[in-house]
Image (spheres, rainbow, N blue to C red):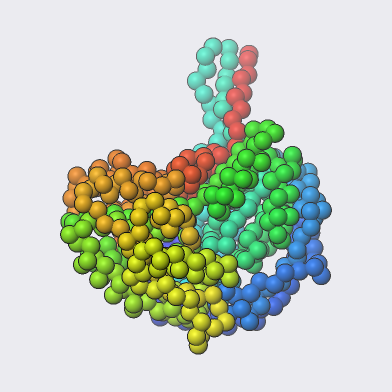
Length: 521
């Protein structure tokens, strides 16, 4: 029976948090020894090195070169696509039991190495210790959950009720062929592994293009599993999105795309990919996620939940809370609690114990933050934060303050557009219906939360909110932290296309197409 990894939660439950941090400290010492290494792309089952490389530097300290990866060319990408296409007939014929065995072995390997994998991630993308371990845990969960789903459904082949006495009928889900996987920086293990596993475990082959900010986390997965597969079933190509990603999207040999990233890039890719022929495009494209706090709410829980949802990993989650709607008669009290909590956050190098907020991912994110802060100061009120941090420990990284903004009109760009930053806009409301209306006034529909003790308000929230992942009174995080198997991660409206969530019972179905088989006597 599937069980979430939950490394930190189990450490807390077992009073072994000191042991957790001791293991993390040792893992940090180990991963430092590999800094600056050069890694290959993997095409056709072979590792290919190149002198034409790009550096992966830590966003917390850009003096640290974590890794070097090849800048793959268009020709490299075409080679990877052709190799994966050629491998499909062999890999798709592997029994579903064999595929399950391979992915469970990979999950066990990741579980054994999780402290080193998480330690490396703190340097590569700036997640703190707990966020990084959560990312690795989620990757392990995806591997195990999808293996369990394939087993539970017996490879998605079942007899159907025959319409005639001389016929035997069966429904079989079969893989499409070759999938392009385009993964983001913010969950460099979990999302890359989740999407790639979805494709491979159902019998497809894949070309994985990770974010250029975080290719090492994805490489660790590929290195663990690719030699267990049919040669060339999984290919790994790093480089510019304008070269590698574009080539994957434009190739007529690619049968499907799994993408996580911005709405702009996702919709552009979707349009170009399906322009000439219908092909599946699985996407998760961000959010502008609201949380509602009513007069009956437990304000301590609400402030804690908003803090974690808005500023966990610097708001660089598609599920992050970026809009808060609080009832007027409790607004001042709530804001005092929230600001007090934010003031106590420890900002610093994410690999250090007790650091909550690390850096944003790169210089472009800092520039975006500075622009948003300048606009907020001009058009609204910056209640807390608003500054880029450049002194002392922050001078070599991309650090910004967690920022709370108020008094912006609902049509303002900062209220409407996804920022992917530690930046939350707080607005007030009179009536519950007004709050729901404002919460729904967005093109996105990914996550949403509410804090209320009124059961009628809670039921109305579930009934009326336009979001795929919803939470009530969740102090651990108002809008983030969906668990594989428990909370399928699905976007409505412009947050997604398929309407089926990662980590849910229907996710694998998207990588397959149905064939009806009729045998007559």
